Length: 632
Image 1 (cartoon, rainbow, N blue to C red):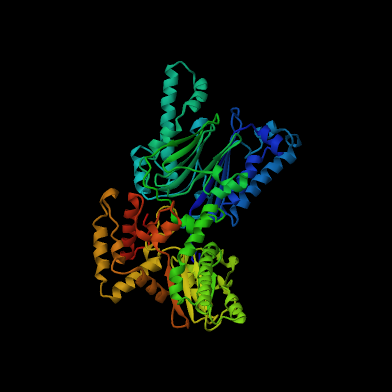
Image 2: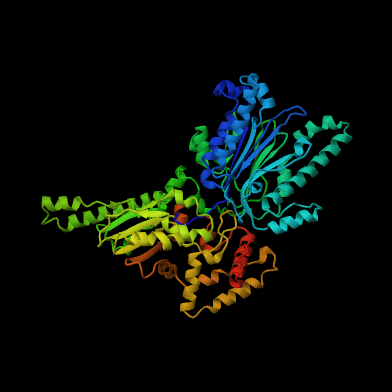
């Protein structure tokens, strides 16, 4: 993706089902779980590089023994940093106590981070917050083992203010409004409530407090707690939690917006944000890794029993299509096929733009995530070239000579690596104020492969703000002196903000929105902006269920092509000598390529939860009033 775009995070949860001695004997180390967690987190570093956290729980410890460990980091390389800290602590203990080296029982008793239950998290900083206090997992501590709660998630709630007020109405005094804290305290409230009820019941049955404690842990109904806690959540989430005594869960939102996969065998229960992470780290086949159904939780009790339980009534499935286009790792076999199909389906429009002149066209891509779509586009272009060869041979069959036949057959599709990303520079582009100064140098260009009579077709996986295209890529591509530059987006026009976990909150930053505003001005229809503002303002006090997305009316007067052409105009200027054309994927073809991930609210404004409509209207009000506040 040429634009810098941040995703919130990824999760990794691991429960070892055997005693630590089993892993020592079979795999040579009692640190099997810690090692696997490092790999799962590192394999998901694409989902977050601003912070990382790790927590572990030891099962069946004696009173007085520490059983919860946690480490978090917001260092430049946070995953490496937390595991360097873990290794340093463990090595220091073993150096000081050599008797621990081969004694698993002593290791478990004395070494931090060694346990049977683990939770890891990687994140991007959101709302400008990237202090270590904002890094997951979050911990809610208590002297009762089963009331300790550790929470981490890949999520964003659209109604965090309402959830905060609900906690206040329950008599709580939350320390902040952050959605992670709010969610954790909500779960914690119902956990406490359930523990109190169980203790009261066991007390009437004659059990002492000491006797009741393990029975409470055994009888806790995690599904019941989650059902009460998540009743009013509105957002996209894969929420993971550990309880101090050893129960664990991961809950997925009812629309399946955020991804979640799991794998179970007789040794482990594993949950992660991405399927290939589990496949790679545990060396298992594609079909062994299951997708957690929307509205369901995977619950693992301390005794190792695993259950997939419906917590919330599933909504229409609207899994995020951006996961398939860009965020998730392309090593997933389904995602790889889908990205190739996204490129292939664009080819008819590309051929129109170059007048079917495949001989005088160079095809390339914006590195690195657009590369797979590029392969699909090139396969379709090769099919077209083969058809052209066949048509030419048939048309000239009466006069065809060996030399002419060889000339026709020698035509090759011209594919080159034109844009080259300087990854080191990308690291420093973290906010709008610094992006403009640095963005022009993020990409370099390959010279000498494009001729003046050539079209240059270059595919990107999406165009959000268009900043990098305008300030860097188009200028650099123009230096190769093509007659025409065709920029192809494997995603449709991004017209609406996200509110479920991708940092895309302000309408005015979206180049499609800017293009629509320009067209309204040019066609003397700008009064629509005022009308939409009034409609949005009148909905501010409505219940979320009654709110409609009136921002759609900004785009309604224009065709997709009109907006695309205006985007091309906005992103190019008089210094660019080549003709510039921008082609976007259609929503219909997006659905055809990614049939299981129909969450398309970025492109259509059809939000999968009621809170989405409130957020988009608030984003428009903020734009109209000149406010830089977040819409959620």
